[in-house]
View 1 (tube, one colour):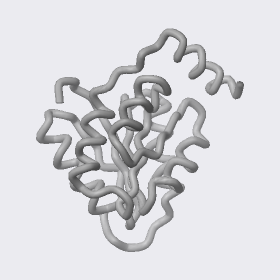
View 2 (cartoon, rainbow, N blue to C red):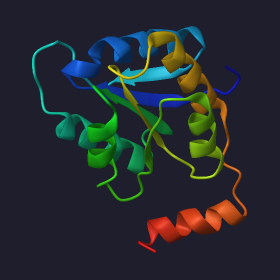
View 3 (tube, helix red, strand yellow):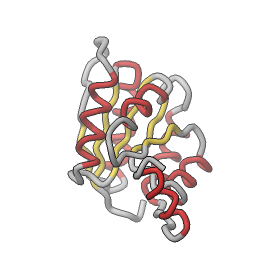
View 4 (tube, helix red, strand yellow):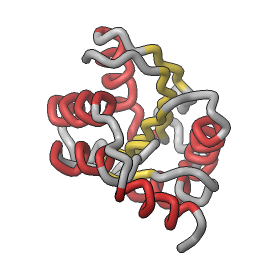
Length: 148
């Protein structure tokens, strides 16, 4: 990874293993990470973790966030409730790239039950290193931000 970022990661119990794998992977690439929990396999409520991570990204404390649950869907729904968040559920490298290029996604959501570890690492690396194109895409992102 070329770009140095500050990323916060969070998961529920169903995404714990993949979140921990991604934290270690990102650290090997020189990415500063913060683990926002959960820290055990005990059942927990993903909306609270998504909210905590999304609020910190929206406030500018972190450039980007990564959320992991069983499918990534619940985390994305919860995170997208926070103003200024554009959370994308991604399960392939092309979508990872496009979510950054065109949508300026600031939270990546992954599903531990959907995406294997090696693919998740590839997705995360592409997502972290892809810059937003801006220009005509900025107009569209602004439309989303202003509730169209």
